[in-house]
Length: 189
Image 1 (cartoon, rainbow, N blue to C red):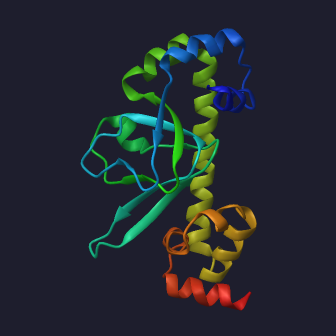
Image 2 (image 1 turned 120 degrees about the horizontal axis):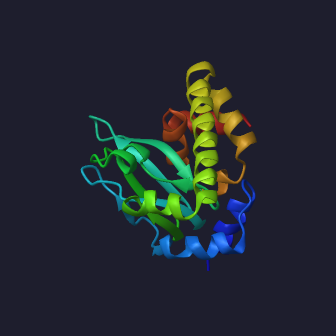
């Protein structure tokens, strides 16, 4: 049931069967349909999701009601609004399934008890958070330092699997340009 998560944890830390048994009471599963909303602005993000199967996105709406996608999460990736999850403050984000998803999640209210019960999981969480911070810094760098076309090429080379799974208008939003510009870039190929 939780094998994908346990295998992911074992890539980063020593994680014995006893750790898995101690972690299991803190794990929950959720199946969501395509386009189902998991989080809306004004809600508090109470769950941290591990994507077992499917694809999730997080986005904001600007003053012109244009989506600004900030995050995609595919299999073996975590997704949450960290600010809301950690502080308990309402979110500004939407979180939505792009595909039907199988999710494993932990609850914010149980996180501290979980860390005390399964120290290996706390170490794993720290390592995942560090990797997410590096990815965020790299994204800021490529948004600010690369041209639109360079950003597109970099994304295509780094994450080729996304091209078949993410609608082009969503990919354009994530990369910071219009769907029309995306079409022009793709036509050059």
